[in-house]
Length: 445
Image 1 (cartoon, rainbow, N blue to C red):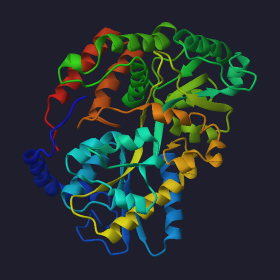
Image 2: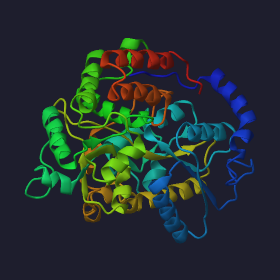
Image 3: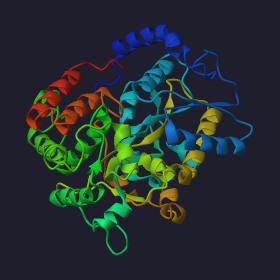
């Protein structure tokens, strides 16, 4: 696993200077909240919170914020939602370098190590976490450990959001794919998985399954990384091309993915994100593969469907690509105790509202919620909760993580295989060369 030098002082200082100059221009368009934008210190009762949550996640987060605000009328919560992906992390970094960070922010877990290593995050003091009842034993271990660097907790995980499998229960029943309890029969085998989709295709007269293959590198990466991890593949063991991914395992995975679209034709070759959603929602595909957040779409459509973990197709040990939304403390200056307690009270409130959050498909990592009867009763969202401890996260690197250049490069070549425009061997070579260039580039932070 690649490691990074801590605090690249000269480069970060340069970025800091450039960032401060660019900060006003970069943030002018936001037209929101005081702290982090105007340069004025926040009032004593203000709690500033940045996130990148849109769609159904954004709706649920606003609902949770309203619950917190109602219970804490003495706090002026200023919540700001910014554009997802690299733009969000750029603004968060620049605001922190400019000494105007929000009190608390959402970060993907896969971005935390880069931000922390660059000195842009504060660790959570253990005694302060304990004061608010948030001890590590109350979280999914895989997620809380993922936010722990050199023994210090830099991220409090709100959820785990894995790559999952949706299936149309009516179509699958007609195809003989359900057991006597109405659940999907075992498809944990490469050939059984293809056979199931072929049987479903016989019912839909269109496709067995659907997953976006074009203009969506993130989804293609999620599927590839799931299967590659099930094979035991490693990533970024060095910066040389052959150290980016293990060639044989990567080729094996891509050959299988190509079978699904190009050879067996149980999934379409050219379909974008919205098209894949529509195929499943309209009953023209019996299976759909994506992050669990699309559950809200299909609940709204009132269609017959269920969900479960993505199948174990390779190897003996289950693994699935995932990321986690976490709470972090941006900033480089010491946080006064009263302000820290106000922030931790907000985070605890968000964790305690895990039933609301989990209704959107994400697995709560706060065990008092995840292990509750109320959460287990939420179906089909709780069907795959056990995979949280089998989650595999993108490797820590300044160019890695959700929405990163790493995913863009890898996902693009994977998509070319799925569409039939590239052979697996050539795609792996391009993936290795492209990411190797990033790996040999010093971090800008």
